[in-house]
Image 1 (cartoon, rainbow, N blue to C red):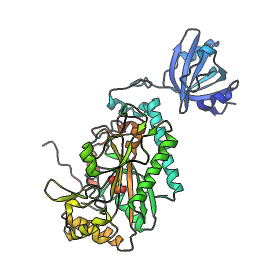
Image 2: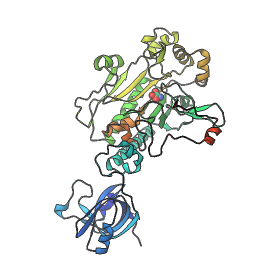
Image 3: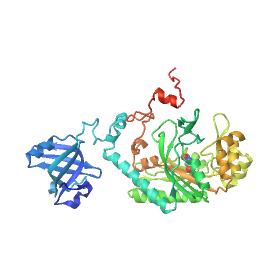
Image 4: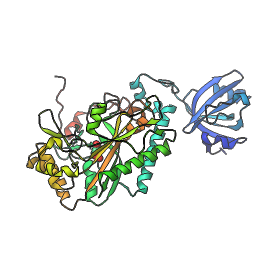
Length: 466
Ligand code: ASP
């Protein structure tokens, strides 16, 4: 009978016994008398030696790299000078007794074990091969560990994970919406959420009190190194809180996350420094200052909070727009100015951003939980009462049923993991990202669709080439 499969990471516990390993042919070296295979599974790498059995050796010599194989043999200790300290299983190897090819691989379009493949289109077209690379594999594992830590932390602090719709309505969150045409309601569109902002506030009205979600957010804006049309947030919201409590909880979560998941990293300053927006601009020329004392150190994390943002700024047309979030509240001492729609340029929002090594990794605010304050915000932005009611009637209505004071935050998870993994862009920590031009060369999206589909949706394509 065939052995049960053993994971490569478990092989050090099996010295002296015969086990079966399944995995991929990472590399092959034919030394004449002996053929060596480095076998890789999802958990490690082990040297497998084929010697002393000409038939088996010939079979091993035929193996193509990246083929999926099953190999049975004895786990033995390596001789002193053959020990490889670079890998966890470097003190042992397998002496192969039998070999089965489970699925042969074509020659991959690039070497899996390479340092770098310049052609990113090619990497993304064959992302499933790109992800076989140890560095990429680690990025996904560490992303998982980060998310898993966050979930456990929030769970033990009474947060409830609630998922909110992807088919939503257009929202004024500052970016362009991705629209989804409705087949049943001709001329109408859903919008993919730019964030779960309104839903999470409605969950506070619903009495959830502590909500979080690892949420997908979609914004139709040009991609950059740290931006993708689709990205992931840790989104959270709390009822009956003040700014201080939301900040304290998030600071604790970030510190414990680093200490547990990235113990090799050092946080430069605890508690995180707090800098007002005005001081940040004056002193550093940016509201995302990189406070690291040593920028060459991969393991140094300089967090800070930026607070006291102006609520409004002038838009291109000369009117007022919000700097962060139309649902934010002003700091309590500026509430009268907001309600009176006066002194607008001086109103400070109860907004807090968390910055790490020069990147904004999160932002949130205390919200307006009463209708008058939200209406005043919209009026300052030039919304007529009719337009406010049409776009936000559901929020006004909800807030009039005893909406609790509430506030929250959202972290850009991809960005955070990118920095923790010392990666240069967020595509390296997302399993299936789009290119910097917003395309997916593997799925070939976006794609055109056939006439029949368009017709069902009541859509007609106007050539954009004219
Ligand atoms: N919804 C906001 C955003 O996506 C974050 C927040 O204020 O909670 O930026």
